[in-house]
Image (cartoon, rainbow, N blue to C red):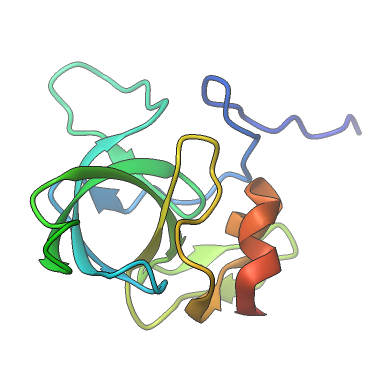
Length: 142
């Protein structure tokens, strides 16, 4: 049996195949201490889809968001974020099924480094495998 190849999207690190459950327009809770509270997905970085279908995102994807609630200097501006958890149930390669309580993200810069200094919520293992700098400031990885 051959080795399983991981998909890559552009210049971003490889990802494990999970269900793409978050559409453009979905609202996420921001769980870092950057000042943002609620974000809305505007675009998915590196997404190559089918014509006339909206881009979808999953755990570990870098997305472009607009901050809907939070500090005044962040509101109504575009920022990049990484999805850390989602409510849709998905299966891991080990065969276990996992789902989280809510859809969450953290704000990052262009290189994928977090803007905040701590993450207040759990982070999925798939996001940490793809973006190791997130795992350094996460309280718990599941």
